[in-house]
Image (cartoon, rainbow, N blue to C red; front, side, top):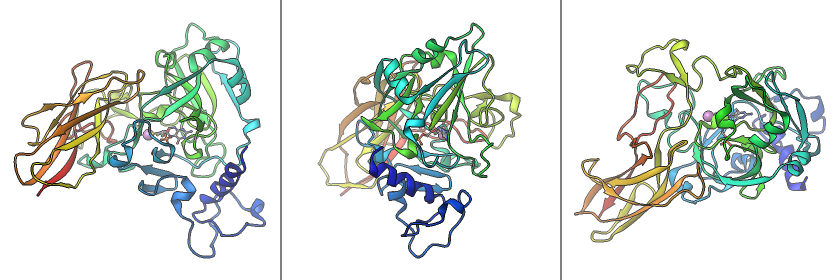
Length: 409
Ligand SMILES: Nc1nc2c(c(=O)[nH]1)N[C@H]1C(S)=C(S)[C@@H](COP(=O)(O)O)O[C@H]1N2
Ligand SMILES: [Mo]
C-alpha cells in the first residue's frame, strides 16, 4: 500500500471523531471507536479528509453525505474528487489490502468460495465500463410535504469509469443453484452505533441484473484505487439502478433463493408506493415496491446557473442524460418555461449504462431573465416531468427537469 494511502487511512480513522488533533494521538489504541476527543484548535479541512473538491456540498459528516453541484459534473468521466458520497455508517478503518477477502455464499450458492483481492484479479477477465450511479434519494429536497433523509438537490449522481471483474463470472465459478433469485451484499463499514455486530446496509439486486455484462465487482475507478469514501478497496457497481445496490467496502455476497432481506431492503427503504398516492399519504409496507431501474434524467452542467450574457450573443449549453437500464433517445431544451422545446445534439453512450452527453447552441429574443430547462426522453418514450414527479413517503426518484437561470443584458 502506498504511504500516502496509509497516512490517509490513519487520518480517516480519526476523522469520525470530528477533528484531527494536529499531532499523533499516542494512546489511540485505548480509545473506543469514534470517541470524541477535545482537540487542540482548528478542525482539519473536511475536504482534505474526504479527498473531495472544495466545491462539493457537505450535507452531513456523520455519516458523510456529500453532493456535487451541477457545474462540477461537467466532465464526461466524473473525476474521483467530484463523485458524491453517500455513507450510511462509518468508513472502515485500517484496511489491510493483502488481507481483504470476498466471500460468495448463501443458500443458493453451489460451492461457497472466498477470494483474496489478488485471486479475484488473476482468476477472471477484467472489464472497464463507465457506469452511472445515482442515489435513489437524489432530488429529495424538492418534495412537498418534505421527506425525511438527506436533502439532496441534484448532485448525488456521477459516472466514473470502473474496472473490475464481471459479477457473473465470479458467480458462475461458485455455481448458482436453480432456485436462485436474488443477490445481497455485505460491506466492512461500521454501524453508527459502533456496534460491530450491526449491519449498516445490505441490499442487492435480482439475479437477472446481477448477471448483466456491465455488473461489476470493481477495484478501480478512473484507473486508480477506488477512493476510500467510495468503497476502497472493492465494491459492486450496478449502473442505472439506485446506487444503494452498489455495495461499498465489499466483503461478502449472498446468493439468495428469496428476495434479499438485509437492512434497508425491507419496509419503506428504497421503496415507493406500488400505485401512485396523494402527497402526504402514509403507505403500508406491503404496498411499497422495491426501486429497480432509475428513471430518465439529465443535468445542465454548463453554464452554471446565474450566467450573464450579452444580447445577441449565443450561448452554448451542455450536460449529460441517463435513463436507468434504458438509453436516452432524445434531448430537448426550453427557454420559455416548457411552452416550446428545441432539439439538442445527443451522443450515444460509450457503453450501455453510461450517461450520454448533449449540447445545444441557443439564443434569446431580448434582454431579461430566462430559465433554461432541459428534458430527456428514454427509449420507452418516457420524458422527464417539468416539475416534481409523483410524491412518495421517502422522497425517491425525483427526475424533474433540471433548470438554470440566465440573465441577458
Ligand atoms: N457498504 C456500504 N455500501 C453502500 C452504502 C453504505 O453506506 N455502505 N451506501 C449506498 C448508497 S445509499 C449509495 S447512494 C451509494 C453511494 O456510492 P458513493 O458514496 O460511492 O457515491 O453507495 C451504496 N453502497
Ligand atoms: Mo443512496
